[in-house]
Image (cartoon, rainbow, N blue to C red; front, side, top):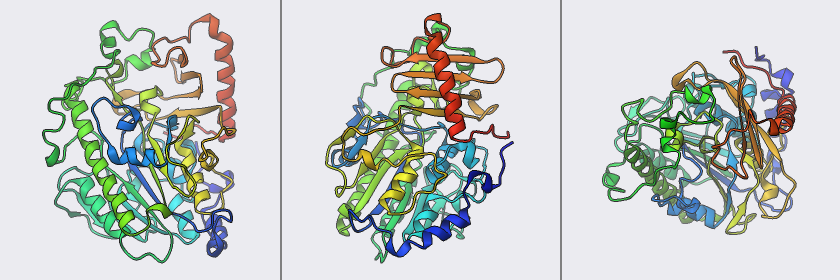
Length: 468
């Protein structure tokens, strides 16, 4: 059972905040001077290729594309646990879900005593706001914010119930959820700020069920949607896949709102069109206030999403559509326009990246690395592999617990509870993960090496199996 005592992790929320407060007046980067404002936008379930700058077949996202064009796009960004609440808590804490305690979507709180990113920023003199969907227990209303406009749980797309102020009352707001949330965020951005600010703007879309904004009712009406070539693998019994994959209940046809492939794709893309329009509102507001080029703008998602691959939807599994996310950063004082990186970056890296930009000290307990050294777009020593974990079972979609490792070429997935099962892929020759090599004796040596590396990464992150 995982301890809730922060002392065994070498971190104390109170101790860290006291230490960072001591540097608040002088927290600037000597090389680059003035600390940037920070705007962190995050979607819910947006896969990495769901942007036109990433080559999507029908979706057009000019404002996301602008961030990529004027900044940095990471082409290999991943999450360490492809599930909403655990991933969001990882972004906020900079540690794996087995450490921060939010291991599933069952309304778990971040482990007491663990500092979160907005608190670290406030401790060094930032004004901090949260707008939108937290999906964290208590909707982050137990934390201190200079401005708060958020909702509990999943919320609803139309006429949402939202509270203004962490101690405010949930009230009905007419309009489309992400429009309403963005309009309040923009109004806050346009206020006079005497300190550098950080805005967390976390959208509801494109979370299921995919409800369009009324203005997009006919969007993509005549578009042709390409079907993944593994769409019919269900008729073949998902060749090569273990029973843990085959028996997972995340297949098209198992829910009333996930029947038609074409409808799901077009509705999903329509909700992202509304997100992109709201990203544009933020960029316009920053320009109008003269803060655009003084602001580091980060854009990402809490996890990826299957959209028909192997007849699947949802996330959770360690396959590429599920674990890959968009990751864009625009900050012209540090990043040249059009920079692209193929380094494997993780959601656990976001907190240390933001802290370095803010001139704040990096707590020693963080599992991630700052991506700032990658901003120049030059070869930089970086991680060669990383560790994945998933715990929510038994639960909705029946995806069994598993862990694994991904390198720049190979992926090993271990369903570690009885009956144990494995998946092994050579991503260089098989990027679609169609040929499971786990039972091939030719790869026994590789499999053993990857197993050993999983154990090393678990030790490095002080892994403990969470209590269910």
